[in-house]
Image 1: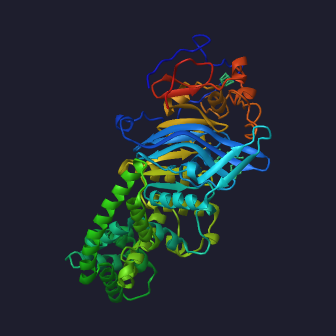
Image 2: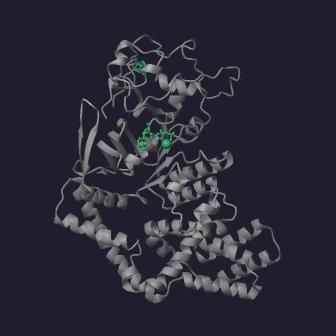
Length: 544
Ligand SMILES: Nc1ncnc2c1ncn2[C@@H]1O[C@H](COP(=O)(O)OP(=O)(O)OP(=O)(O)O)[C@@H](O)[C@H]1O
Ligand code: SF4
Ligand SMILES: [Mg+2]
C-alpha cells in the first residue's frame, strides 16, 4: 500500500470542537510497534467478509465487506459500539456462526495461507427476492459437516477463542479439570508425554528436595517458603507441574513426614513412564511423523483447491485420529496404563494454570463443575482453557469485561506473555478503549458491520480521522482535562436489515455531505498503516 494523505476540504479535516466536542485522551501506554511485528508474517488475513442472518423480518446484513490482517506476535484491537458486528466477525472467522439463521455469504479467511472458508459456495444456495427482501436458503448439510470437520483441525492449537459469554464454552456436565485437561491432552498430548518422560526421578538431589519441602510445610512455614521448596522439587525432577502437585499434596495431607516423602516418590514413579510404554511411544512417534507428513500434503492440496481421492483418504485418517480424542495410543490396548499418569499430569497442569489467573482454591475449582463457579471465575477458567493450548492466534471477545480491574490486569499480562514467548497473534475485541490503548499494536474501528478506520494504536488516539472514531474517543473521560465535558454520539447503531444507503454513519455524522447519502466511501490510505473509509479523505484507494 502506498501512503498518500490529501484531505478533501481543507488542510485540517478534523472536526472542530464546536461541531463535535473532541476530548481525545492521550494514550495511557501506547508502545510503538516493534519492527519485528511489522515485518512478521501475516497469520490471519480476512478479506471482504460478508455475513448475513436470514430472519423472518428480513436479511440482517451483519458484516458487509470486512477486511483486516493480523501478523505473528501482534495484538489487533477491534472496537465499536454494541451491535456493530464484533462478535459476528469472530464467529465468522472460526466458522461458528449459528446456521440457521446465519451464513457467511462471501469472502476469504486465510489462516497461514489456507482459506478456512473453502467450499463455502457449495454449502448453500441463496436466492434473495429483490422486491420483498426475503431470502430462500437451501443448505447442503453434508457439505456443511465436511467444512466443520476441516475446521476442527484448525481450532484449538491453530485458532483458540475466548467467548464473550463464558457459559458458551463450558459443558455443564463435566468438571472444570476434565474440560481443561481434555484440551491440553488433545492439543499437547505428545509434548506432555515428552516432558513426563524427561523427568529424572532418581537424580541425587530429588530426595533431599522432597524432604525439605515436607519439613518446611510440617514446621508451619509460610506458604511462600513452602512454594519455593516445591519449586526446588520441580527443578530437581525436571517437571514443572510436579512442583504444583507436591505443594498441594503436602499441604493438604495428614500423613507422617516419612510416609509423605514415600507418597511423593510413588507419584513421581507413576508419572515417569515404564520402559515398555516408552518403547511403544518411540514406535508411535514414528507414526506421528508419517501422519504429519500426510497432513502437510493434505493442506497443500487444499491450498491449490484440489479435491481428489487421496485427499479424502487423508482427511478420513485424520478424522479417525480426532475421533480417538487425541489419545493416539488409544487403539493399542495400552491406553489404561499410560492414560492415568497423563490425566494426572494434565490435572496438575490445569491447577497450575488456574493459579496463574489468581484463582484462590485451584484444586477445589478444578474438581468443581461450571455451575458452581461465579461469572468472573468461569471467565478466568475459560481464559485458562484458551491459553493452555498455546495457540497460533487467540481471538478474545471481551475477555475482561466481566472481571474487576486487578484480575483484568493479570489476564492482559498473561496474554502479553503468551505473545512475547510463543509469538501468539491476538485479535482483541472490546468496547473498552482504555484496554485497547494498553495492549493493542493496531486498532480496527467497526461501525454497523464495516471497518471504518484502521491505524496503529498511537495514531488512532492522537489523530483519529473518521468522525465515528472521533466521537468514540470524545465519549471517554480524560483525567488530564477534568473540566472537559463528555459528549456522546447522537442516535444509535442502525437497524442492519435496512442499513442507511451510502455511508452507514451518515444519519449520525455532523459532516455528512450529499455524496455520503448515496455512495459508500472507499477505504483510502491516509498514512503509514492508517486507512479510513470516509468521503472527507481522498488518499489512494486501499487494495485489500
Ligand atoms: N443469531 C442472530 N440472529 C439475527 N441477528 C443476529 C444474530 N446474531 C447477531 N445478529 C446481529 O448481528 C449484529 C452484530 O451483532 P454482534 O453480536 O456481532 O455485536 P457486537 O459488536 O459483538 O456487540 P456487543 O458489543 O454487544 O457484544 C447485530 O445487529 C445483531 O442483531
Ligand atoms: S463519509 Fe460518512 S463519516 Fe465521512 S463525512 Fe460522510 S457521513 Fe460522515
Ligand atoms: Mg459481542
